[in-house]
Length: 190
Image (cartoon, rainbow, N blue to C red; front, side, top):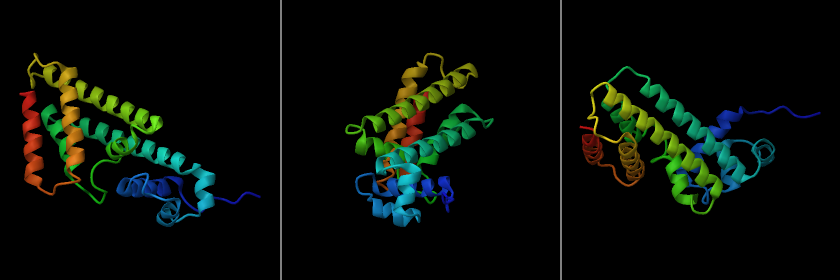
């Protein structure tokens, strides 16, 4: 007779996200995962597979959660520039999570070495650039942004700035510096 799971899969997956995010893939051992997730090693293997499979499931869950947060934010009825500012500012707020971005950290750590990670990160970046392109188009249609801006090019610029912020928050505590970067970045939309 099979034993029933004594844990909720998404709860322990969220713990794995936190640990991988804080320590990175290479530095996180299976023993670290066992202790932090609070489940047996055999349960990890039976439920998620090996460490890499668990990491990929954690990265996919994180990406899905981040996409949901972004979609929720942009559905607000606000000026487009304000929405983009909120997306950027959410990056610099550290609300009980490790610094930076799990997806960016993973891409930097493993993107060249692991095609599966590189593909997931690239797909996520492409979706975000598409979202930013659509925001710029909406801003142009509403008259908030100049029509001579190329929405695709400006979305690449905004994405690059956003990725830079997601990295910089790991090395600076200077909130004014981060605010200045956001302010300067958004002037490209004027």
